[in-house]
Length: 272
Length: 237
Length: 124
Image (cartoon, rainbow over all chains, first blue to last red; front, side, top):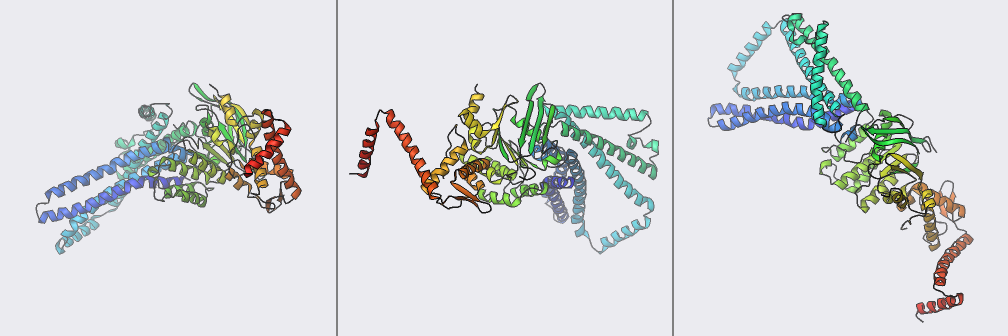
């Protein structure tokens, strides 16, 4: 059931995000080509600048829409009138909440990938026409040089970078899980539910910090990402451990908020 | 009769629901059997929607119990209950084709061919989104989807509120033609005259309490009035 | 058949009346197979259980009979049909009689009036 719900969630968000990705990719390509020609024939400054602004705006739109949809999909689809449909499906509440969470993580990742891809697309469309024997030779020299100098640590470094990305995404998911929990708590108000949710969010923030402070006094440090010196963050293995600990903490936080949300929506649902 | 016919499919014991200080349902005891079309009637605010939402686990009881097919409302009961809410509930962006796939994916008892046959009469192109449909069309589509499931319990919340007589006949005919004969059909309404001929039983709700639960024809015989006429008398202001 | 239900009379009784009339009129001729209960119910816009009850009662009266596998049929028994017609016409006369006596007419006057009315109607 979770996979079916996830599939529909992907579809519902994809119908907005995919065109944005497409537009950003297209604008990157056109921008690259125009920038290339602008170097040879002057007088295209204005269109190039316009396109550059569009390119930037599209990237901002991707970031904003990813965040906004992560919240509104939960709010409208579960707590709005569509909730009548969703809560009538033969699915458990944890699956309904989990699908939203997984989809948000998936699309955050996709947005990062789309941003990177459109940057690559710009580089290629601008750079490829520059290719000639000379530049190709220079590039292959550079590549050979890189390969020669590449050592184990570098590969580990790349792995670490991915781990860092994963940690960042999970930390964001932790924040999202708190937002969902806050919306579920705000849903308990009979009116002014949004205000209730905002207050609940602030309350959860304070509570979460109290718990973290309390835990750190007993020797369990949940802020490890920001207190690298304790684990000697200067070494690769120290850094990895730090990230893994942070990852685990985020996972626990997500799980806790997910449980709060599921229980509240299961036992105390009251659609308007 | 098979396993569901004449079996109690909806049972309430001492069922109470409060919202804060207001009580929507008060100590309701009710047993409804399969193979019946039951009218849940009462003025606005008498607790009809609350009872239906409790049966579908969209609300949880403050006190007492409610069982659907012998089970507490939840994931298992939702698989055998086909519910028509009293408002638009389909995502606006979905096309008719999307919605059909959605129902097919999530409900194993959904009969797509039956839905398509009924939809063909409405002549809506498959790519039309819910948003673009007129209110009347949307209501019919929602009813068709609900009735295209081979469910054990149908919960229809105000299916004929605010529709013209032609649409009302269409809706009642759709219900009569498609419901599973062993199933329980519960129709809530405040317009009894319109649904009276299709009912086996009526349940009168007044201020959150069941004031009457009887066979419709027996009621007509006893009171010498239509159910609607009797209803007006009971709920006279 | 067109159906309009009166308030205060059980629907199955009204359905039975409707079928009696239809059979007497020949709308459902002797030996004719009746449509399925569900189809009849949908056509009349009534609950299938109510329709079932009406037909069961008609069966008890001998107006229809059912074959285990092939469905329900209108009776072919001439006596039963004869009695049905007589009952229906008696009911009409009964109603007319009551109205006319309420106007103060005697039985002889009624008989004379009926003869005159039949002649008038025929245009003689």
